[in-house]
Image (cartoon, rainbow, N blue to C red):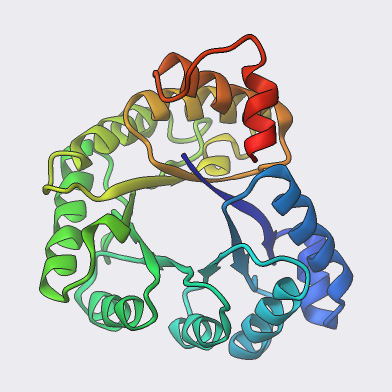
Length: 263
């Protein structure tokens, strides 16, 4: 299970202020905290307050890499900002993300290949996010076909079926789980799957409970990765336990300690 730390995102007030003022301390703090908590990648999103997205992304990448050397997942709808960040990475990163739109596919797949970056592909197009699993799977297939067309390694493509908040789109959750299962049938080898976990719990009463419950259900359906709050200890304990139950780790009474030591 690949874990991408979600916290360096300008949508959070402290990071938004840090980006606007070029204050490195909140960024450094969260980079260190998430690294110590076991993140494999750190998501890096400039957020809406950045007047110059390219400059903000370059500043964030440089600031983070001063305190940690784990790979970064560059998150923006501005592909010039992503490419500027990719040029500065010390290790191959991840691009978050590309829609199943032809113009975006033609821009992003060659860029991901050039910089040896993993790529998150969203099951949405200009019409938006489909409701049912079949429609999501059809868009995932377009992304798989694009990987083949542009010579992009299919094992580096992560399909995101786009989970929506359960309090306003409850019927989508089951369709997302089905899409995760369906993605494994699209090619051989199959693309990987990923979710932005915290989306499922937006504005719910007990966000941590909703997040970890959905996480375990998605793992049982074959989920490979997630953008998560790696500092949520209850969530990380649930991930560790799910790996035991799914026979991905050998059980020992100390498995939680072992999982944390591996992190």
